[in-house]
Image (cartoon, rainbow, N blue to C red; front, side):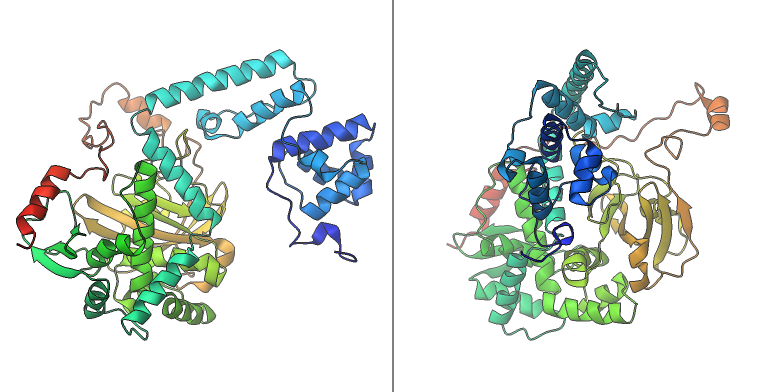
Length: 490
């Protein structure tokens, strides 16, 4: 490292540490030495505001900078990285700061309290106690779906950390395609059948598939059962790929909902990686980027997949292979999120547990405004100015048995230059989560109708129902076992 500028060393990162505790420890060591913030900043050749950001836990220093701080304070790096707060007051401040940065406090819609030296301990303790009680009430109210929502939030964080790109699954897909002689381009139904045969499975189309299943795999006899009537909205190759994907991935029966959800994400990822092979898809998208004409419709048509599959696959490859931050949304016509992903700093609505599924999307976002577009056959594009920046999105409405839903892919304004549709005149402004944006009726309208309206809500049956139980949530094992008995070879 000799001769390098320690502040600008982008490869020399600090070990993972709690930024709040680290910041308080740096402040404590500085104050014990009688050193002012300005003096430490001068020793680091940085502005005092930058050092203050570190001490407040809003920024983690890189390892090279951490060494420089330790030298200035005449302590070791290990002293700074110790996990315990420097004193009881610091522990209290850290707990309050952490609470105020969490989803429960954010859901209250109030400004955080500045945790300074002049704030009495009793005040901080009261804030912390109130926060813990609100958190307890949230947990109590969300007790039934809590496991599922927490699992969704944790899995989305994992996907974000990996830019939604799983290299090990890409390798498995490439090896399987190579094993059946696929040399490039769209994957035919015959190629999918060859893959099933290569793995030791035969395909059987039946008319009595259990109603709660899309396919049933008989692992004992190497059979995959599929419905004789294929949904018009579903790719007929996908159920086959999803059926043998669990075999390829070595999945065992899920132990809990988090395990089930992880397996489903891996299965869907592998299915998309087989339908849109990474090498071919990256080549196609790279050329489109070079000509500044990336389009979900073009990707869909080039590989003969659904729009949703193309949008999903784009998010797998956009950041890791094209250097484009991105977000994805699937939104029901009611306005609630079915699933979502982001690594581009867009702020999705979320509940107190940090989950976004089931939360309402701002009426000004592309995922909602696309439902009002008369032309459902042409791509729809829109710029949206939000509290976290301006984003451009492309969106399309698809149909399913549960009703219409929109599939949207978006990027920050700085990256719209790579996409077809960037010249769109459509623009909207979203002030959410400010309730005056779209969640509270305009004052004049409310004055006319408050107390005079009594709508009958069409409540989804799943809203009040418990999370489906069982090893495979929502599937009746008796029905599946009876089905296998009927169809097992003599």
